Length: 184
Image (cartoon, rainbow, N blue to C red):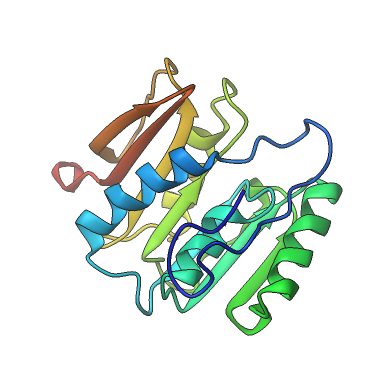
């Protein structure tokens, strides 16, 4: 697995051994970042989160493309070791905040983020539960873009969010979401 574009283009991303995590394949990441770039224009100076981060490939890709800061949240010890090794290898520590915890332990947000990327375990509904909580705690604002990766045929039941775009790539489904403005 490698960074696709930006400052660290073609640099390898280490992943933990075993099958506890499911790294987002290069083709899926390429599709996701193409979808995001067409909507965001640029990643410059964005504040992003990579939740259920695993090795951190999504957040590192955003940082490589110019994001100012990334919050990584992961609870698996082997994945956290890989994540920290990747951040150190890219010398990205000043732009990163790593939380070795469950996404569900995040407290109130200091401010909404620009981009939230979630790649939870397939078939668990964990992403939808996390998004509901993040919305209530102020992590999601009117300008926030959200990407949620799920299994190809997994149905989304989202409250307070609208589906802006969806792509199926291999076994994955990528959904781009925004706050549902009709629920004000």
